[in-house]
Image 1 (cartoon, one colour):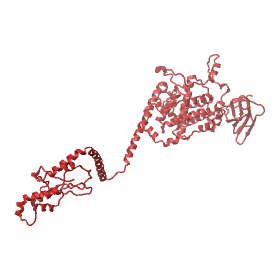
Image 2 (cartoon, rainbow, N blue to C red; image 1 turned 180 degrees about the vertical axis):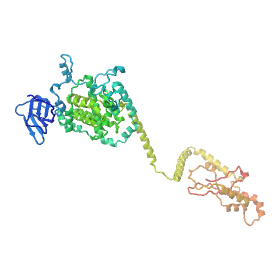
Image 3 (spheres, helix red, strand yellow; image 1 turned 30 degrees about the vertical axis):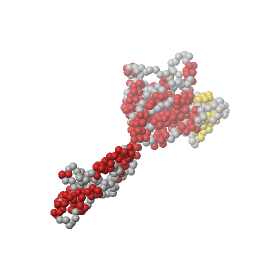
Image 4 (cartoon, rainbow, N blue to C red; image 1 turned 90 degrees about the horizontal axis):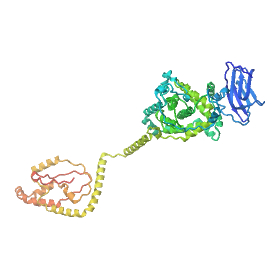
Length: 613
């Protein structure tokens, strides 16, 4: 059968399957169904209805044995073809990867234009072997800038060169790297690390660490592919792919992609896989923090968190990818918490295990986000479009191995090189000190008078305890001293404590001096003193003014002359009762006024004014 295809339209289509049949649904509105043709041969399927033409290269073989049938719904413009499988029960893989289905049959396998004779068999064996993610690393020797000036490449598999020579203005708004055409890979890494270190903000990081209510809410979110994986844990990746449903917009985008084949050596292939992890980590973080609802910052978040997109980084291991992602999460986005790093790693591992259909759907979402962002569309041309085409041809076994490697690789805060553990420890100590200060500030305060009296009482009480303990140890020596002090006091009759003045003028002077002395309004409580200490204190003998006059003048019947003559004789009897009646006043806790009834004269400079405080 010969088809003449000129300016034909590729229709929208969808393929499903059961155990025995392949069901191909083709949307052909306004088609001339009076003239249509269907061609079935092995893995080749062709459909023609003017002006539509559809050619599919299927992942399995179909046959034309009379069981095939076709129906057309004129109202909806849908043509449905049911084709039997050559092997009943066979599961066709990748029926939702539309770009690979539209590829020409001759371009299904990728072969270099120049190859060694007899190398085809070896290539087939290499394609089936398990990919070694832990490749040997050799010390890097950086060549001169002149040697690399025409070799600095970037993009998908480092297949692009010289793109930014003519897009310098757009470059400044898209990536952080300047002059990528002349910047070797090693220098890109050094610049990236320096920029991240300069951007790191300890205050922002600690704020998200201690005030993490919003982050704890985000950690509970589950991306859609986690739900798909949980619903098909026991199923193979091929069956899981059938659970992924593409929207009409995504299907349309897949039909627009041009099918390509990529010539990648082993080193370039490893770089492509590692960069895929980097892209999916950034996307997983974005989906989690926005809870699946993209916003105006989504394009910025994805390209900023990905070292591949922002610095054209060439990673050498999975550990390098995780360290770079952890550093960038700690420096750039709104939420900077290490728990989000670990969650994004877990989400990406599940995504890789879910299958290439789920990965393709995520890449299509990234493509759509960048396409709607004016400067970021350049990254679609450099990376995302090629990834959307390439991922459809990747074997599921390699993606599962990549998921296992990612899950086995761990990254800690110490690995990021930002001293996060030391910073958190210092912040925790400061926080504990602040709590102690707050606890001390919350102690109830008392009025100043109560604080003074209570402080004096408590201090006196402590001194009393201390003194009493000392007194128990020195009781014997103190008794001897007290007895000596008592005998001394009894023998001081010749030196009266207070001079009794009978002159009226001197009494007036004494009253004037009394007014000049300060008056104590309150007396604090004192601890009990020893006798020796009481003697050494100033003692006040409280007597009324009338008592002094009575003791000094004697009886009222004596004359003035007799009083003057007997004054000398009466002083001794007057002093003697005072010595006998004098008492040591104990301190009282009640408020009292200090009364001073006698002031020593100048001649009695050696005598002391005794008072009780």
